[in-house]
Image (cartoon, rainbow over all chains, first blue to last red; front, top):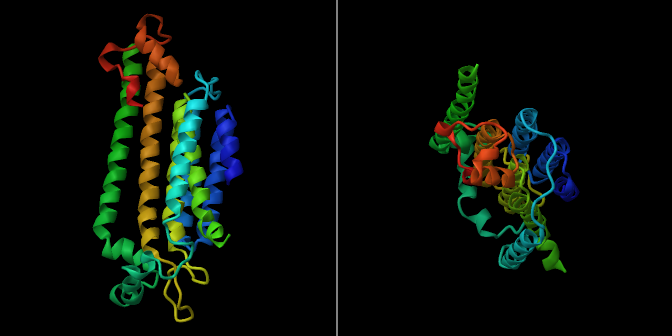
Length: 168
Length: 136
């Protein structure tokens, strides 16, 4: 995964960048399966690796497929990112260790959902139960975000067609 | 040494996030910037999911055969985040396509150059609809 990202950063051919991004998304989905997040892995494989790649390729079709050489030397951004990364690594020392069963994340709300969820909603998959039942309004808000994004895209791209027709 | 192994997963995610950030701030191409933003986003998904994992646990689908489950709540949040992420990516790409129509380029420095000196624009800009380059 890290190799794919490094290759992606260095490549200047945007088609290669997009294909590497699809590869990276699939690898991420595999890691998610290893982290027991099967629903998320399925969504990431379909949406992240599938739809995102198709959208990026569609946009690439309308633009140039070669990236130009960067105008500035990359030393200042490199310094900024390494500095931020070191600060974040310093921050991880205070985080609970990987798979620590007494970490706050495992003791607070989740046991309640795991114990009561299937009985209260009748759905054995707790992720589905929380998503569609306990947090149904959250999911409604999410669909509204997607709807708004769709309206924005239609507004941007239909104006383009209108302008082109006006020129002819 | 045990401490190193216990936090190794966070460091992988930090590396991915910083690669994404580096692409966003150092590359001039708008499509590549969006790819960098998507990588930064994916690393945050992993950062949410990893603490919820329990070694020896299974996916949170309740069954009599299992007693230890991974935490379902981060997974719910990230499911929502993935869908919203692809919606924003699509909107960003639509903006890039519009910028390309208007300026004839998707390189940031060329757009800034055209904004400073509109006389040598490759594509004649429509003054009623001049998208500022600083928006992206």
